[in-house]
Each structure stands twice: as structure tokens, then as C-alpha cells.
Length: 309
Ligand SMILES: Nc1nc2c(c(=O)[nH]1)N[C@H]1C(S)=C(S)[C@@H](COP(=O)(O)O)O[C@H]1N2
Ligand SMILES: [Mo]
Image (tube, rainbow, N blue to C red; front, top):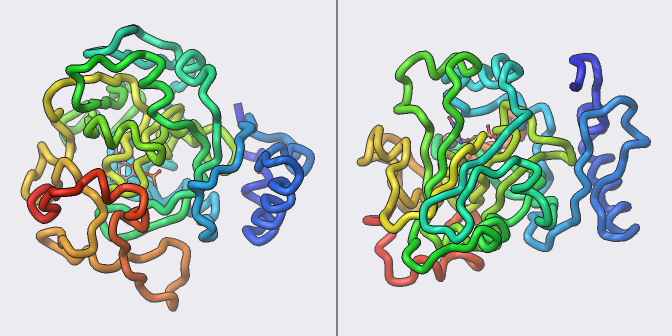
């Protein structure tokens, strides 16, 4: 366990130094991590290879990423997850993988991760509420896991569910959302190399407020698609029910691709506020598919994205 007083190097290292150190380590063999010597007592480090899929935009600070969160199981204020998530038991952890797969079962977390190449993926992250961050995730491509369990030919979608445990998740004692939190992807979206299961960030195990021990990250979609603390993955034939779409289908679509041309009914999606940029920074333009259009636009060829929002 990491004690409150134990700061790790990402807490205490200025971003510029962290970035230059990252560059140095990259030169020294392609591994971004292994900086234990700087750290003193630290949370478990995760070794991760750098990825060409990372952005070179500067990551947000560890503090921004871990204190400004949406995780309604712990409350609806941005500070609630950081205040309440420490109580969540994340070890042991298992994921039930089922539906149209060759090897269904309940897999321990270690077994889920086993054999998957762990990479650092520095991604832009755009919430539907029109704020954004840059996060140095650690994880592996969801496709690697799906290939391992064997996707059967009838499967067209992947459905995900978060843990239900109201004893540890105070938000779940109230009907804020229809628990469990549910999300889903079309199979081609799930198999896309940008789509990852993240087990950490800033080179450390995933902080609980960010979705420990394992969460989805789909960087070209609004943040609510990136479901946290996953306990169930199902391969299914039909488009699954998803939490925000169930709550308000006119406002939150199944696809929820970042799209500056399709506004939310109650606010514009044309621009965004970068968390941590400072009060004088101003808003920045939101990019089609959150800047990942070159990689993902072809998935939606022939679709009307105003209709399939
Ligand atoms: N289980 C669960 N997953 C969730 C949410 C949630 O409330 N519950 N919030 C979503 C939303 S709206 C966003 S913006 C991101 C926030 O991720 P972060 O706190 O790591 O930035 O998590 C998404 N995944
Ligand atoms: Mo969000």
C-alpha cells in the first residue's frame, strides 16, 4: 500500500524535468520508465514501452489527472472520486469475459494482463462536458485480449460493465445512474489499435479515482465511453445498452465520437477548456475525432455522423 506521505517522483518532479527524463530514457533503449532511483518509496512501477501512437503534447500534471475526475460511483463532484475512492478494494480483481467467445471465463486481473505488451500511450482526452486533458496512460491494446479469448463470428459489439459495490462506492447508494455503469463499442472500434485497456498512468498502477485496476480508454470518443473499473466484458450480436444513452438518448449517442460540428443540445462542442492551462490560456478548438481522424475516420465511412452521434 502507498501511504499518504509517500510522494512518488511524478508528484514531485516538475513536468519539464519529467519530460526531459522521458526523452533520455527513450534514447537509452526505448523504455519510458524505470526511474525508481529518483523516487524514494513509491507505488508499484509498471515497465512500459513507448508508443508511436502517443501525442507529443505535454501531459497534464499527476495532480490534475487525479483530482479532477468523473466517476459517479464515488459522487458527482469533480473532487469526490479522489476523496472517496481509497475505500475501493481492487485486489483481488477478476473480469468475467463471456458471450460470443471461444474461451469464456472469469479471469484474474494478472491473467487478463499476462502476455500483453504494456505500452505508454500519451493520449488527448476530451470529456463531453467540453474540458480536456493529456494523459500518459499505461496499458495494452484491447484487441490483444479479444484475440486471446477468441471472438466468434456472430459477435458485432463489445459490452463492458463496472463493478457494483455500494459498500465501497457511496454514489451507488443513490440512483444517480442506472448501475452498473455500462458502455459498449462496435467490434471494429474495439479492435482498433488506439483502443486500450489501461492499468496505470504516469508509470504507476492506476489511481483508484481514475478507474483502478483496469479501465477502457478510447481517445477519439467522449470521455464517458472510457468506462472505469471493469468487471465484465461481453461479445454480443446487438448494440448494447450504454449508461448515458439510457439516461438521455437525445444528448448522448452510442457512438459519441468527438465531433466539433455536432453540438450537444445544451452546449457547443466546437471548443474545449484544457485543464491546467491557466485562466489566461483561453479555449482551444476541438478537433474532429479528437485529433485522431487520420487513424479512425475510415471506421465511419458512409455514416451520417450527425445522425449516428
Ligand atoms: N464507471 C464509470 N466510468 C466512467 C465514468 C463514471 O462515472 N463511472 N465517468 C466517465 C466520464 S464522463 C469521463 S470524462 C471519464 C473520466 O476519466 P478520468 O477521471 O480518468 O479523467 O471517465 C468515464 N468513465
Ligand atoms: Mo465525461
